[in-house]
Image 1 (spheres, one colour):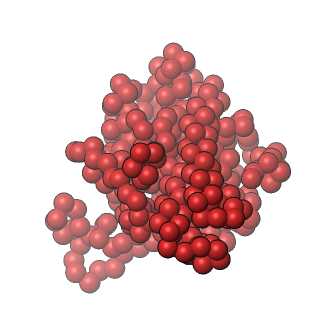
Image 2 (tube, rainbow, N blue to C red):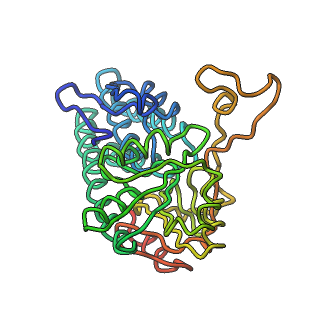
Image 3 (cartoon, rainbow, N blue to C red):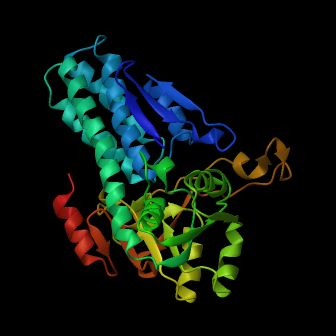
Length: 345
């Protein structure tokens, strides 16, 4: 399953529209920064690694759209303005800004718009290729942590649809199955947008991996009954003190800790952010209608407000291990933080 890629012939970005799954597998092809920004905002394309790739290609789209309109500093200003517009679509996930910055810096080193376009495309394609390699590496490291026979709980979607292909948390599961382990999955529905039941269950079913969907609120009950052997989730940002992931992750971490169940976070190095702490991160607030309306049916009285955070923060003390493309790291994660500060580009 290929989530996002560049169409060289049409000079445009193609991605799976995840809002249409599982009923319909539809794709979007865009040549517009504005259309891509709308798609990111509406969660047509989502997931930390996929957002990094999309952000990089967004800079390519900007360079191409302005290459014949402006030149010199005006070209640079226009592309940088588009980059900031894209960055603002999802403030919590660090990968989006990371992908934008990496491609933007590469493009801005060039002297002409044409050269900037070529350099931006090469760098964005490098990010896409790297994501595939990194996810398979994460999968290999993580698979070694799972028992030969186990049931794994996962929350939201950290699979191929959240990356270019393979996935982070689901990459661990895929790699374990590929290695001959007997793994079944409990996929939390992940309210309010049901990214677990719509996307994770869709992916695993397509791969023939046993999966059942559970209500988010059932996880603690199933842990207490001994029906969950490990929890594996992805991450949208990891600071030196917390993991940011889809809201509900913190609840599962607390429950897993109480029941002595390992709680693993699978994420590439680009998700690590040592520029600040939990207190410095803006948690995105989603629209009221995500809670108030379902399938056109009103679920709440008019006039009742909502609190609908997209993410929560899980203290690192509750995380058994962080599985990265450079190895498995455990609390207090000093080695991981030092590696990140030294090696990230």
